[in-house]
Length: 335
Image (cartoon, rainbow, N blue to C red):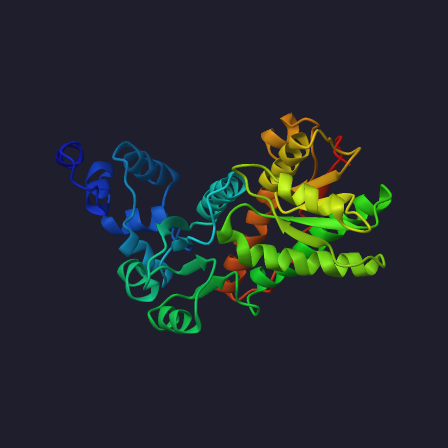
């Protein structure tokens, strides 16, 4: 048929092609594919349209979907330089893409640009923008250009940001400090992350750890950097030389925890006998470490689910979903 020949030649399949292949009108195709209610279309006709659309690999254009919905179906995700693409972030992106797709939204990941409000967000007019940080002018410009939902994780008024830096971070800190206190440690350290791009995240974590220590009547944790390239031998020596000595360390992530283990080995020491270590974000490396690391875990699937549910609620003007519990503890041998 002519329409199938056109599809084979690489031209985008249209509703007209599906209508010709199914032997019905374009209006009928539109009613069937859009699931329009109140139409008395015979089941045999509906099946013929669906089969033709599948055979021709018909997909509505983004413009058509936007017109039908009254908005774009694109979620623009800015990959900011402040966030290194770690294993956990990669998992989060995969879950976000799959869950937004299930909600009828398409994720487009874009490396950060200096002027996000005047470039990509204008070119594709997304319905949603997710970013690590957006200044107030950028947010205003995006909304003026038709972006309906803007999520910035450094915006204290944003519901996702409030959850990430509120309940989630507080639970992480309480689990780390509580586990070390349970093991008998009264002077704690904080192993700062190896990547300077995580400075803001580590500052917020330190504040949460300070509050958790105060709840147990402990002094603030001693925060020291732990370079990933040569281990944390200098930090280990400093912690042990203090009076009273630091005996338990809260590591920012798995890399920082592994660096502390490497620093201990440089001094002929081990965990937990000489220094207990508990990290955050479990990974294969944490499981294979010597000793295997006790870790606070963050469920990236549940994190993505909550983010998608918040965004879709904001798009639809619906009540926000309750915040989930995504943090847990895996006991191993480093505490």
